[in-house]
Image: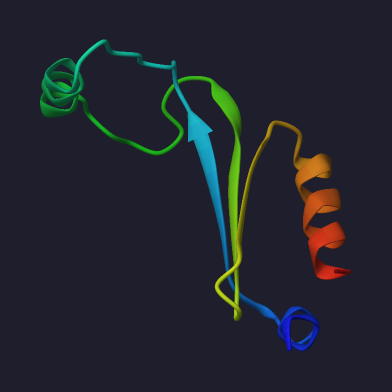
Amino acid sequence: MALNKRLGRHVTRVVVIPLYGRVNEFATIEDAVRFLDCHMVYEGSEEFRKYEIRIEFSNADKVEAFIEAKDKVKEFLAFVAGQ
């Protein structure tokens, strides 16, 4: 049964998020909330950092990856597609 579930799975969702800007770290939740209250969001702001990739499957499995190089993202997606 478990093998059938694994073999029968298929990709249901792929999310690619380009990440920009500096990393902001906080010691407390309150500090993070204060930051968010003042933070202005706009695409492409500051330096490109990496891609965040999320892949969801029909059997509820999920895979997340953080990859800097676009060609490596493509290799990762090709690898997942071949599974």
